[in-house]
Image (cartoon, rainbow, N blue to C red; front, side, top):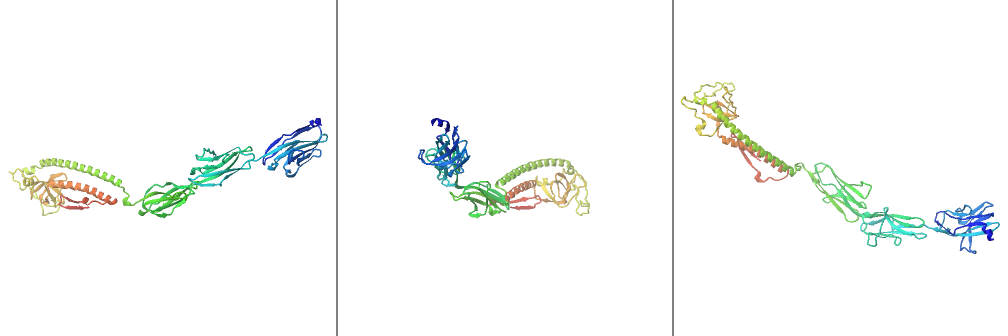
Length: 529
């Protein structure tokens, strides 16, 4: 009998492993020179002994070419190769001992046993909720429950957004999060702790993972606010305030405690960042002031930031700096103008004295000798006149050295006369005068001819065409200088007063001035400002 058994080669391993839900093959092989009557796979219910109860799983009759799966294995079990049994898919109740029986006509039934182990991958449950909402500044605990693992897991750790979290004892940022203590504790939660957390375990079957999203509520904060603005009347102004927070913040605008309407919107994909625009149309002077932006979301305290609006009215649009610059320029210009005037007048007086000396030499013969009398029969404009000019030097005697001049009669004071009638010269040495001109009298007597100086020229003219005015050369020069100086300073002061009014700076009482300017015509000009 032993020799016959040796004629049938029969090979079956002691055990086999399978992952739950995946197909498994129980490998078997035989060789025999005898004909095979049947191949039967059975499930041993108790233990592999003769008295154990068996339930048929699959049978095959080669001569009739009949094969069949029985019971709960129907549709899942089939013969692979010559004698191997395949179960697809596997179930947890498939775990146990199986027997393979091969029957031949000569040797009868031969049987061997194999044990099937079903491995169950771990099932992970993370919590306490998904998503997990926590608040800034608190601690959060993330749980990871490992279920149904057969056998037990070999390792466990946590990751955040794909990066492994390293735990360092009980004093660090993170504690737990391993195979011994699966729960992960996060201390002092900040907004940066928000993200996706994943619990990962290693098992003999495969790696298992489960994730949850942690959301952190943090207080509102104002990221930016528009800079202060200076605008003109009727301008349009837009102020923007950008705030961040979770939950998304509520943004409000106010001025002097009065709430203003503003448009709130989201400019980016991050809904936690909001922008509020405050638009002011056709601003006026009352629009000036501080505008307050406030943000709050129920977490922490309300935050505020302010900006300023300055509406410039027309008379205030010149700043104090601009006025100072203008005043400096005016002062420098006035000083330069005064210097030019002084130099010009000095040169003018020197040149005038030189020309007078030359003119005296030129007209000396009128006073050292008798002159031919001639009378004027008409006015200077060619019309008949009853007022004829006197004869030149009609009062001179041949023995006199010269006429009695104004300077001989009254010293060296210069005399001036105002023209009361026009006179046009008939000779080259005569002086043309017009009504209103002020002529300096150099030589001559009343009732005769005068030698005068006007507009840079010296010449003779009848004495009855003028009348004297009480002003000396020094008075004329002083009045001229005073007139120019007063004109310049008046303009400067008027400009000063003008800008004081623009800038709303009250002018001191001492700055009010009364300027009296005496003109050669004896006219009195009074200017008050």
